Length: 158
Image 1 (spheres, rainbow, N blue to C red):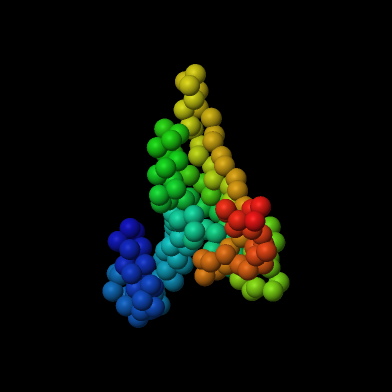
Image 2 (spheres, rainbow, N blue to C red; image 1 turned 45 degrees about the vertical axis):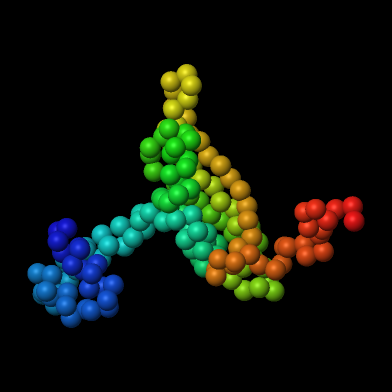
């Protein structure tokens, strides 16, 4: 079944539906196999690892303002190095506020969970960190929420 799934992934990515018969599955005769393979593809995509940035953008684009999944990338490498844990890091993002004047922008809350972090006394505990930030779907910060009139570093007291 793995060969069929890989072939389907390759052809569906190119939107090459007729080529799916090349996968060894006659689609008209065996719709059940196609349905099962589609379910496997969707479930694999739901658990695919993402970067922190892509998880944030997914939350901004989601109708309910939420996104979650396994996170990979330099942030996770840093967490693994500092905590000594090797389990996958889970990310959860929720939209705190959408900025009405800037479509596609909002305030996001991110929670990263590193399970099974070794402690000094030999036990294992979950480590998590939370923070919020303002972001737009193009990766830039929104204008709303930025205090343009605030003094810059080094200008205080002038």
